[in-house]
Image 1 (cartoon, rainbow, N blue to C red):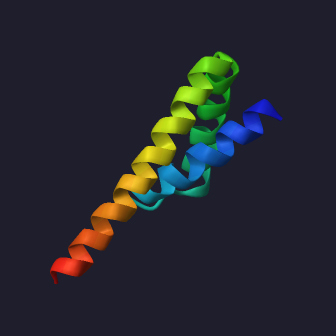
Image 2 (image 1 turned 120 degrees about the vertical axis):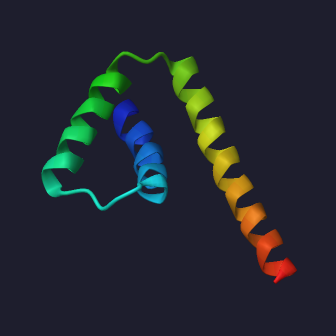
Length: 71
């Protein structure tokens, strides 16, 4: 369950910041790497990542609203 929660947070960010469209095999390889990394992380590290992901998402949203207001 711990890894599924982390993966649920990481995957949307990966899709947003992806520079190109991933092939299925590239995506599977990336997911395997993320899972391997997640297994080595402590609960404190996961909480920190969750905070960063949430704040970055919020920051992106606020910046998008500012850009829309200016145009």
